[in-house]
Length: 323
Image (cartoon, rainbow, N blue to C red; front, side):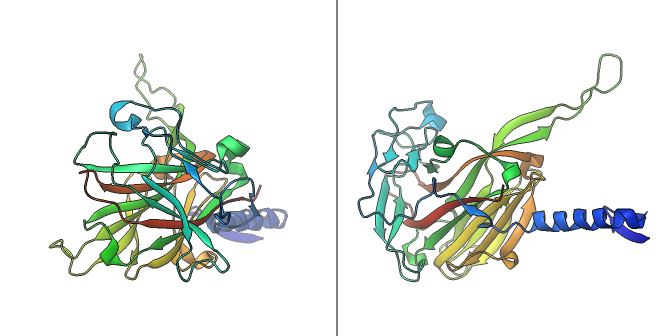
C-alpha cells in the first residue's frame, strides 16, 4: 500500500497502482522542467546567420495594418526564406547581418542587427510608442507544430551598453511566440434559469519576454538598468522577471508542454539553458496552448521621426521539439 498527496488530496493506493502513480508524478515534473533546447533541433527553420551572402529585400513601404489597416504587398523577405516582414506591424528599418559581438556563441561569425526609427505609418508620425515585428518563417516551411510535440524556442540577444539605449523608461525589445490555444468561455444563464454549458474558444495569443529599460534620467530610477517583463499570467497581466544590472549577451527560451502551459527561461551569457534558469510556468490568458506557429521579435521606439530604437543584435534563433 502507498499513501500520496496529490492536488491537495490524500489517496491510498494498492500495490498494483503504485507504479502508475509514480509515473504520473514523474511526467508532471518533467513537463514543468522542459528546458528550452530539449529534443531535436529543427534544421529546416531558424537561422545561424553564418552565410556571408545573407541579405534582405525590404519591399518598401512596409505594412501598418495595426494602425491604418494597410497591408502593403509584397512584404519583405530574407534571401534564405527564413524570415519575413509582419503584415500586421511591418519590419524594422535596419535588418543587417553583422559580425558577432564579443563573447557570443563560440565559433559564431555572424549575427543579426535590428533597429527602427519609423515604427508607425509610413510617411507620417504618430508621436506614440510603436513597434515593428520581425518574423521567423516556421509555419510556412514546416507547417504548424502541435504542442503535443513539446516545442521550444531559444535565442541569444546582445544588450548594448546602457548609454547606447534609446533614453526612455519602457519596453524596447521583445521575443514572442505565435500560439493558438483553447480557453473556456464563462457560462451564460439559459432561457429557463439554468446555466448553459461552457464552450471552448479557440484563439491566438502571443506569450513572450519584453526587455524594459529603466533610465537614470527618470526620477524613479537612480541608475540605468533593465528588467525582463513576462507576458503573461493566467489573467493576462504581465509580471516582472529577472533584473538586468549589466548589459551583454542573454539567452532567452520558451517551451510548451502537453498540458498546454508555457515555460519561461532566461540567463546571462550564451551557454545552454538549464533547469535552474526557469522563471515561471503559466497558462497565459487562461488559455491552453494547442498549436505553435512561430516566434518573432519586436523592436520598439518613440515614433517621432527622430528617435532611433536601441540597436538589437540576435543570434541563432532555433526551434526544437521532443515529439
